[in-house]
Image (tube, rainbow, N blue to C red; front, side, top):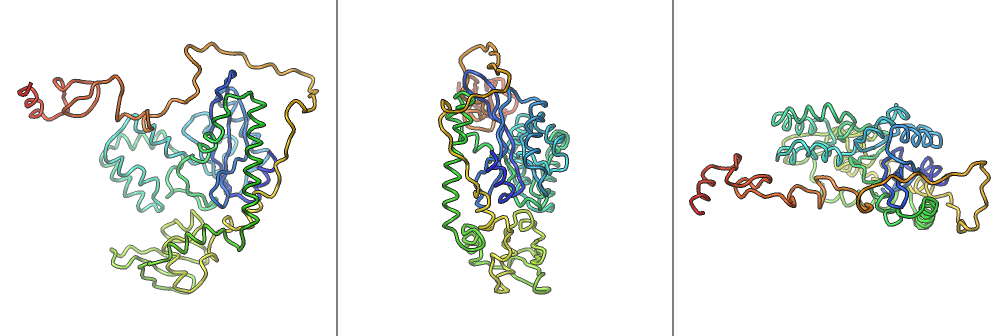
Amino acid sequence: MKPCIDGFLRGCRPYLAIDSTFLTGKYKGQLACACAVDGHNWMYPVAIGIFDSETNENWIWFLEKLRDVIGVPSGLAICTDAGQAVMAGVQQVFPRAEHRECMFHLVSNFKKRYRGKVFDDHLWAAAYSWSSYFFDMHWKAMDEANTEAMNYIREHHKKIWTRSQFLTHCKVDYVTNNLVESFNNWVKPFKAMNVDDFLDKIRQLLMKKWHTRRTVSTKIGGVVLPHIIKKLKEQSFNLDMDVDSCSNKVAEVCVKGSNGFKCVVNLEQKTCSCRKFDVSGIPCMHAIAFITSLGHPLEMYVDPYYSVQKFRGAYENLIPALTDKSQWPQSAHGFFMYPPLLKPIAGRRKNKRFKGCTENNGSTTHRKGQHRCEVCQQYGHHWRTCKNGNPDDIAALLAER
């Protein structure tokens, strides 16, 4: 809808999370959605579309329509899952955009092939690393443990999935696609409705949400959103850091009593060598220590995307109220759109998606119908034929039984 598109261009950061969810009604299909994020870090739906399946042609169609209405904003970043069709569509329609890959989907695919404590300790830590120094440290630990697994990531997950490689334009530091997953969960109770009723229900949900947030924006004063100022003030308490100033704009900052690891803060450019300040647009703890030592207000160095003005601009336009569909004007397009052909499917109609191996009810910690070995605690074999366990344990069980 145009109010969402105009609000995105006026008040949101240039970041889009794109994914689709299946419809559960009589006629199957996919609801595609592009979600942004406002200054309050609230989900901001920008555009939706419906197609029959996730194919290259359908995703290109949706993304081309999206490009027609939003253009290509400066510094645009797009986050998707590892689906071949949506990734190919983004590459074709938005070739200059920063293309990020959802870390949750990457880990889900990775753990189908490789497992181990070294990956539990370092894979997510590598994704959350702000600087290349810490990323390389985690990557090296995994590469030394299993080079084949790291070669798999190099070959099959070539998009950006770590904060250390994020560009600094869009000021969004998310490593997952949870924005659009939140939208999918929001509309989940209505996915069995007819398409026209479903889309009108989404419009109604957005209309109510926009009104609530517009009301909130009118009650906020100041320049920067209050939750950002509150967060910065909380972080400024009890900072035990050494600040060695080069000037009123540049300084070296390190934690007292640490191993001497220093970060360079530049307040004029709003950067820190740890990269958290650069990527998020909010002062990191090193920048906070330097700013407070100068006696400057912290909100002076917050990016404008977190301003009250931007937040109000995102919800300025009204989403129109409509009558029920019995009062809608009759269409005269010169053709009649018949419902899609139904495909015969065995079994009952599915209302829930199949969960991945890392999710609840889909995890490998408990496998229904498979025997668990008492020696190595793995599935698929009996302890008498165990090849992974300690032979002494097997001998003890034999002696006992």
